[in-house]
Image 1 (cartoon, rainbow, N blue to C red):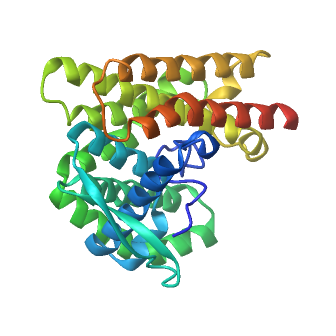
Image 2 (cartoon, helix red, strand yellow; image 1 turned 180 degrees about the vertical axis):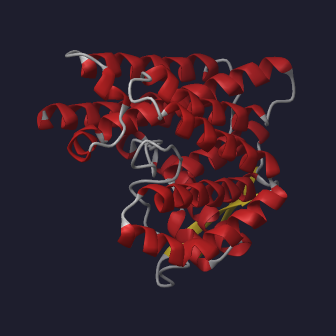
Length: 297
């Protein structure tokens, strides 16, 4: 399946479909890129098996990173299997062979977040978009129900995040810290589930919080121009003339938080890929989007 440009992670701020946790392909070794693609394709295959063929359309970079991170912590990738793409049978690809539930967990997170994104669209969108969302809602609801039955913690964290985000955004002057906290806390809670002791839990939660904060804030920057035109909520609106410098500094601080915690972990599998994402991919996304929004000002 061709990688999507944006993946899934929810907020209520406006555009709530993300895909910012990306690799910097040009900086990866060929074998590392092949391994990354195998996880992506493996997640696509797992989503089809666990939910349905249609669920593969919500495959994301963000949940691919989640799968890579889990397998790195657990050393659960035991090789790669050759096969053919489910969307294009003429295309050969590799599938990561995972011995635990890392891919299943990432697939569950994908459909859970997609469901709550759909619920947000039904509540806040115009008539025709709401109509389209209502038509597909039974599919998303069934996927989410199945995922929540197996991974109730993930569903609970996502639901708590959506409720908290809704309350925060009732105040258009809430500020960027308050606005980003629900998404950041959700990812902190999700990664914290993987800890085996108090020390590792602190590190996992810090990585999750920093990533969640970065994703929320970079999406706010990305959608700033459109949100100003449409009158939609955006925490940047409450900032002064130096708003983009403030946002750039906050984004860099969020990445520093992620790196500081990640640097203390003993990861072996997929280390080159995760290094690439944190040190190359995310900063590249930040520079790209900051440049774009400044040019549109």
